Image 1: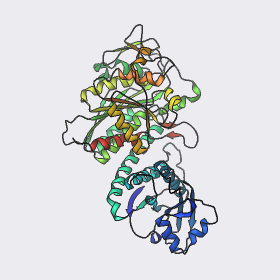
Image 2 (image 1 turned 90 degrees about the horizontal axis):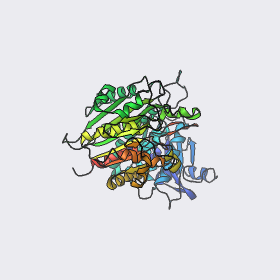
Image 3 (image 1 turned 135 degrees about the vertical axis):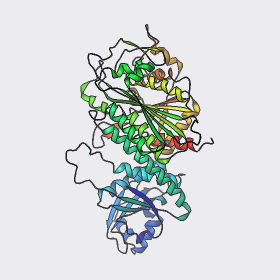
Image 4 (image 1 turned 180 degrees about the vertical axis):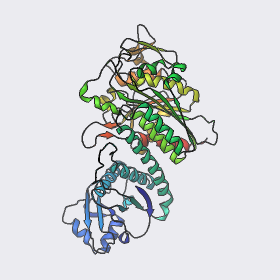
Length: 500
């Protein structure tokens, strides 16, 4: 889908649909008033019948409105003019694209930048319209034997904007388009079934990314390379599968100083998680195709960073493996040595994400990073704690945590900071090793983060537990969500705007 800007009179637009907003109590936006005036009160007459009351998210499609060039006029409810804010604008944008996608229109002129959204800027509203529109038309049909014939394609949406805000809106469209493409990539990777999306598949996708962008290079560590580096923790997970594990390193060198300290993203890429010998219950095991969504989102964010050519150095490390039971799989009770030299007693082979991440987090020390953020569908405990709205945030640095939280508030891809207190560390004590890989039933997400914290003491680090937000397991919305690509990319945009 292409996005652009347009100025002029909406009533004369040759788009297949003109989208205007109406507040509660029939208070018209400027564009809605222009259309009503051109149609000699037709729109006001229709609304007076009560089918549309202007509540936030309501929609009404009109056809062949008198004296309006476009064959369709989509009216979108904007809510109470005094209380409209950012979250309501998101609802308005989602409702708009749902209604537009239900029509057969392939192009549209959107006049919703006129809508109030609290203190949010034209640029903020423009990005949200781009992101919500792209998300609203996303489908995954790669695995269909015969592609659906009834998929409707919206080819272009132009945003009506005046000259004073044109530059701001065009910049926002560029950012929103790049981020949306990254989100779609993350969704595609997450939705690709595990018999296809193996660690090798992820490595090949990373190689393709490097061919597409001149700023990007890719390096793949094979199991023999990891063995030389002493990544015994990672290899304890991949050993049970016939699919070889991969450590995938993607670098974007956008800063003028190519040696400037990079910002690093680390993604958990368990392409399927049976639980290993600690086998998961079968009823919902299919959901574990999404256990690589951490890897998918850092990959999508890296794509957006490269597309935007951000003037910073960014490194993306994906710890990709498959966790399977076999005669060579790790057993509960095994003790392994991580790259850091710390030993780990594996009490539960289903707590494997932290075992691959800890070696990846030790590996990234070589980059002398400015910041490190790892992203993982790490624990079911975080779902119990926070549900499906924010990601769980843990950090060993307050400034880093504040910056991530700020990016989440801007994008509405939000986080909630959780404790990372020393009081939790004794739960990981082991009688025979430096630590155990699980800390009991209490505070499962916290102790998982405390485990990772033992490998991140040499740099500013944050951990995002995205088990509750990365995918929807059932229903019509089933599939990967692409979160938190928008948050991660916004974080990198913010870092690019800081003084060097």
